[in-house]
Image (cartoon, rainbow, N blue to C red; front, side, top):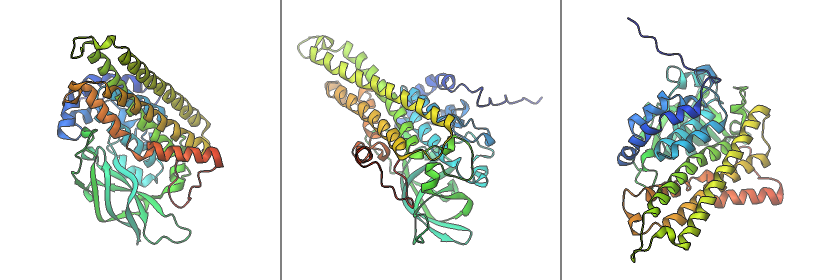
Length: 400
């Protein structure tokens, strides 16, 4: 007797919010094991795939849903409330789907055909090099922060072009199969331990032309390979916003743990901590920062939905940097809130297993990502306000 596999829902039928909520208990059960193993637990990865969440930003031609970036942002905030590792890995891999949809159809076919639920790891920073070769490119280098690499069959990597011609792109992004990538386990970190963000090493791999794209125009959304509104949105504005969804979820988890712990704490003299006016002021400010971060992120989601509907490319510099600045500010609000709460967590907050410590470490580690680096993004936003331009180099990578 043949058992028929249930048909996948289409984009109009897929309820990503229900899908995310349905796997929260499963992710909560595997969260500690991910941290212990320093990579995403296998069952957590399976839960992400089986739920359909890994298809949210995958091209429709291969069974994906091509939803707005707001779906990724909301989902990863929700998952971050129970598991930083699953939230982060899903966020990163969906952000890579957001880029692969801009590559030639032949490349998309190779990446997705037969495995549209896959998790796509990689590194967007151009830490390696590509050199022109007959029919394609030769890729070499080491890339850091390959989140989710243990579960990825393909990798997207940024690379600088060796000796580019004056009119040629200086930076390209390429797709590489796992067989050509060595995973070097360097991931011993303060936080985000369960993301398995190891180094990726490639030695003289041949990359066919159809698996390579010039970065600047591709990241702006000026690609000849799609008419989909999703893949015509800017990459770094989207990535920064997606990342802060995960950060917000972690901070919300930390706030909840802090309130629960503080309600039962007493100081060395037996006084109830919750009755302390200093503690009350601290939690009021931290809660307000996280609440405002949620509101600002909701606004970002609405703006992405509107940009999807408008389907106009390229988005202006001012709009792009506003997205990235708002995302960086969401991350900074969450970081400040966790810093303040952890400073008041008491001596018991220094022990492994403290939920407040876990959230504190994860939020601080996540906020070191270059795309939400507060100093550099504030400088770009200030430059835009004062001069009206980001002064981007169209042969390199856009800033937002």
